[in-house]
Structure formats: C-alpha cells, structure tokens
Length: 335
Image (cartoon, rainbow, N blue to C red):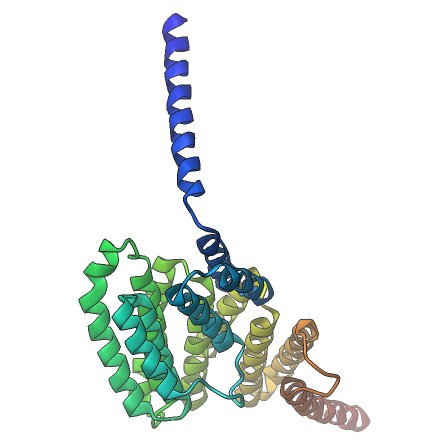
C-alpha cells in the first residue's frame, strides 16, 4: 500500500512539474502571437468573421513592420478565400515585391505563399503555361527549403504548401489549357497527390477544394465517355461533407451547385427508363443548393449572380418536368 502511495505521489509531482512548465511556456507568448494564432485557426475552419476580428487585434499589438507584414499576409489569405472571379485581384507587381521582402526577412513560408498566389493569378488570367512554369519553380524552391523549415520548427508548412501547389497544378491541367484527355488525367493525378498532402497537413478546407476540383474534372471526362459519373459524384459529395463539417455555407452552396450540374448531365445522358429518377435527384439537389444559398450573407437586396444562376438551373429542370407531365397526359389519353 505504501509503495502504491509513493508511486502515486511521484506521478502527481511529475504532473505538477509538467503543468508548471506548460504554464510558463504559455506566459511567454505575446499578445500579438496569441491573436495571430487564433486568426490562423479561424481561417482554417473558414470562420472569416472571427478571423478578421483576431487580425484586427493582432494588428493593434504588432510592434514592427515584420509583424504587420504577417498580419497583412493573413488578410490576403482571407481575401483570396472570399474573392469572386469578377473582383479586383492583387497586382503581380505587389506580389513580386512581397516575395522579395519576405525573402530578405527570411520568412520562407510567406515568400512561397506569395509566389503561389502569383501562380494562381496567372491561372485565373488563363496564362496556363506561364503558371505551370511558376509552379515548377516553386516546387524546386520548396524542396530546397524543406530542411530549413524543419530547423525552424515549421515542418507542418511543407505538406500544406505542397497541397496548394499540386491543387493549382491540377486546376491548370484539368480545368484549363486545351482540355485534352491527357491533360485531364494529369489533373486528376495532381489532385490525388494534393489530397494526400492536405491529409498529412490536416488542412480540411484545402482537401475539400481539391476533392471539388477532382470531381469537376472527372465529370468532364464522364460527359465525353458517358461513364464515371458515379466517381465524380463521390468526390463532390465528400467535398460537400468536409465543407459542411467546417461550417462554410458559401462553399457548401458551390459544392451542391456542382453536384446539381453533374446530376443534370446524368439526366441528359440517361436512357428514358431512368431519366425520371435523375430528374427527381437533380430537383432535390436544387432544393438543397437553394437552402445553402439562403445561409450566405450578401451585401444588398439585389439578386446575386449565384441566385440568378440557380434560378436558371431550376427553370431548366422545370422545363424537363413539364415535358414529363405532358408525356404522361398524352399517354393517359391514349389509354
């Protein structure tokens, strides 16, 4: 009994020492780092309202230009998440300046992130070959700095950045360029690799985006070969589940909208015996898409582009439903 009590006391003393050590470590964290870390976590789960609030606090606590640059970099991340394709993009010149600034400060992760944003802008502008060249340069840079990241205790950033790099490459090959079969397959392969890196980094939002891109590429192949629709739906459903898990209504809307488009393709490619089934599935998906869109906050009472598109898609489905009912009425009259 005494030996057990002694053992218990030893364990208790050990826990007290560990707790004291942990508390002293927490006390050494500055207010700036605390708010910046909180902002990173909120960005990861796509709660941008809370993220921007933490960034505001971090900016107020920033002591020098380097800390202010870290805040601005994260602000750029939130902007890239919410930015629509028709909105103003960061200029290439500003990104090049940011890359040099971060390189001179020794902030390798921020430098690579700025470079990736540059490659993404080139992709958006449809400069696909130049974007691929940039991505090749970034990958070479990442391989070089991998050991340095480990020394800086930032090894986590390597799979996170590789996931984004491969994701962009997958988008260029799969949904850009000439759209040939060979490029589509390359795009899917890049998405598979990107998904693996995102899983290693625990980056749920990135993995959801990768699965979405993968599903869209597969659906385009399915449209050509009249098959693989099930595989496309599987990827899109997994992406939707991940976006729902992190509570991102805009991404959930976009995901559901993409599923709706795939269901519509299945409807168009189906034989008459199962066409009614896919019409019902597509209609139910349009209802879910509408419900997600209602959760998205918009700035004015004017119909958004997303709302207009959804109305158009639902009108298309109603047209199919009308044809279905006309056919039923005609058949009943004949009988």
